[in-house]
Length: 152
Image (tube, rainbow, N blue to C red):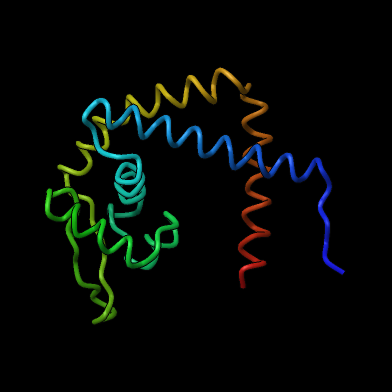
């Protein structure tokens, strides 16, 4: 017998999807209107900048940002062309590569950061208290953990 989720769970799922979609579309639109990098590029550069040594294995980057490997490869190709990222071979694995954010990539992300932060403040900070944000973070981390386990 298939599992049927409650209306409340369905509503929470739809609200999550809708809020995520509307927020990312708004942020990406504002970035593009301002002539900045896209939100996808912002996320890649931010993820690399936050990583130890500003570098991640391509496979780890693909998992972290939820791109397909082929989609990520094309994006890294474009980011290399504009000087935001370089690829470096892995010293441990002849087939492995690292994506490394450059100072130009960090600068591009920092330039776009004000637009992202302002948009998030309007949507998230205006709608949620600090306590609400803590609760939502904890709940979504639980969901992420269960989803990762279910994918195995």
